[in-house]
Image (cartoon, rainbow over all chains, first blue to last red; front, side):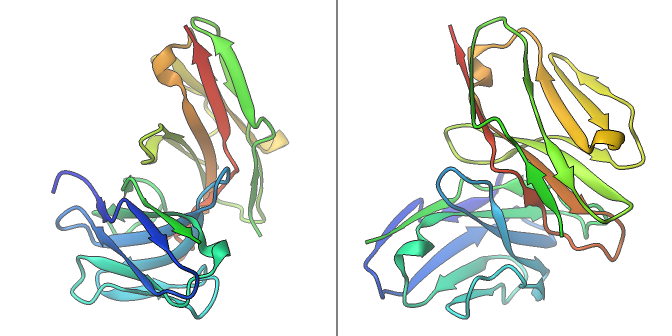
Length: 117
Length: 117
């Protein structure tokens, strides 16, 4: 597609529910990133994929968070047993390059706004 | 550890005024990249500029200009003759450089710019 597509755009979950957030990167993009953006804050790194390999998951806040990219294209971020502090916008970004300079050539999606009630 | 500080939470100006957004960073890396991103109400992050740490030349792009001062660890962003369409949240960000550098971006908390007609 022309841009990075994320779905759903909005998600309301009851506390304790599992959720799955989808990211469709630009076709052919090798690198894929997930960021979490709390209200009024800057995005915070969650995890990074190069093709299907998850090379960095140091930003995942707990073992309730899990990300996958099994075929090196679409990625899913799964949050188990959601809690209120998980409420945030989850941003996905992709890049054509295996980056030597992070952030150059990223295209970000519009994000999924997750509200846990 | 890396840190980016944007002390201005919100700035309001009248159209055609010049405005400067401040960014101060901390890093132990000798080489790094600095970025500015724009986040309009639609939510996606739009890349504006990347600056390498060993290139301290100031840059101008149309109404936008950037002042990088390594001595004060600052990377400020000026919009000349602001327009209503400039209204958005602006983020400064930092990353490691090099092939083995961590590819994650560290963002500041953002500055919300409102340009009044």
